Image (cartoon, rainbow, N blue to C red; front, side):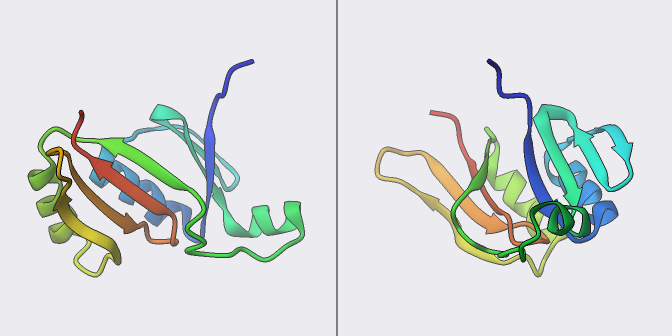
Length: 120
């Protein structure tokens, strides 16, 4: 068995596509009726479709999952994040762990938690 994709629920597909392209360089592989497959295995699904499928409300900012990225030049990444999305909500601003690894955590436009760290 092989894990193929990670799906996150978004309110506005177009804004989410732009966000993940602008910040992480992800490209759209397939865009079909409220479902978007992007490079690196990220799938965006329109909130309305997901709600109909699970027949439950969406709980934004549930803090139970996160998307994890690594970036060598994390200072440049944070600068780009602040320039493109100045109102982004942080869980923690850029910090350095005692072992030297740097990390920033924030929510995407739909409350999905994202972590960006420097590689070990």
